[in-house]
Image (cartoon, each protein chain N blue to C red):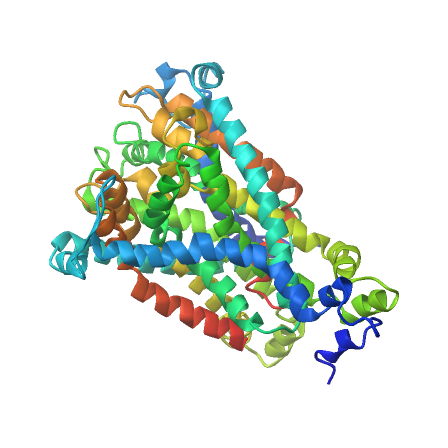
Length: 281
Length: 308
């Protein structure tokens, strides 16, 4: 059935370009992995072919875990990401629900405000924010980032959730209210369960954004034991001497693992969240 | 026309002012739900925004009180050659990466929009650059572009293309192009996957009709595909432009704005002035300098989204 000409066409239109994309997108990860398991004598030799590893070693991982604060950073990152995700999704749900389903004075202003807040980039706010955190005496505490990350996560989550909340038929809620449910009960028992995919999307997005955040963490967390993984790796593992790349790549790879695991379980929800804003159903 | 009376007609007759009755009113319920989030965003987004404008009008250093100087910071910036260099860098970075990401992402979407086994798995892998923490993947690129041990140099030298390796991050224009490559690598999947979702809304009937009319592949793309995915294309591009405009961590990690300011953009330069040098007022002014262009983009996007 598959004729030779067919296969050639498919090779040209599908397999070759696909292979190029996959190699380009994944090569840096392969490079992280292979660097992290190479012994130094292979890493720092210009004679050895660098694309493969001859004598793999876990030395860099052991050094990373025992000689640096990497585990503390991981704990901090996960703690911050989980707390800010929960707080943000709850507050965003509370905002998105009335915005999507109710008529009340001020709704349009709040809706525009949420959209604008989502689009205002961090670099516009970080200097005044640094001063505010200083005055609150929250420098070098995880509270500083737990307080500021929701400013990035709430607007996005609220905006995403509004779309999901709008899609639930009004009749369902009205039927529940005729049966005596309050507005709050109609929301928590009828609408929210139907919007579980949306809530998952918002949570996964928030979680990855919180893990990815860099600027606030860089400014607010200057002590090693309160740092998050990206900040710890960038500020402490990049050192003056040359021979640190194995450990650095081990850190970069391990630091990406929590996000990658969450993502692999919920990739459909992640893609749904990504495209919800840009693709109308 | 039951906009509001619904809550009044609810079975609270006779006792119109019970707490429950009050909570059931749309306006009361809505604002009760909204207020925590709204108050939070007012305190930590709106207030810092206006406080930033206030700071930019001051000569204010860390750990000292500010002196009001009016627009002096902005006047100083306008006469600073570095400021204009940074402005040029920012626009170059945004414009070039946007073109690359758009073209590459569209290509990725078109390739992925064919039937093949394991498509969802490939899609998941292709999105990885976008979801992995940027600072960490950028470090991998630092090593890929290392002056002595760059794998790119190794391939080029051993492939006989060049005789000695480039110093990718040490040369002004190579450093900028390195940033463009890394940003494209990170952002292209976002375009690719969202545009793919857009492509999947194109009805196969349209293609069949076009094929019957004898349309070539290029014609089908121009007259069938493009009009359908145009809204997605515009929205994705505008989002991406806004976020690239405010990009910080990729540039900070890879080049720190160097060599010699060659890759500084507004955000990294504002960081250097405001945080590293402790001149909060001037730093806030640099950050605000991106506001005009940004405001145009944000208003355009908001208007477009509401019209859709």
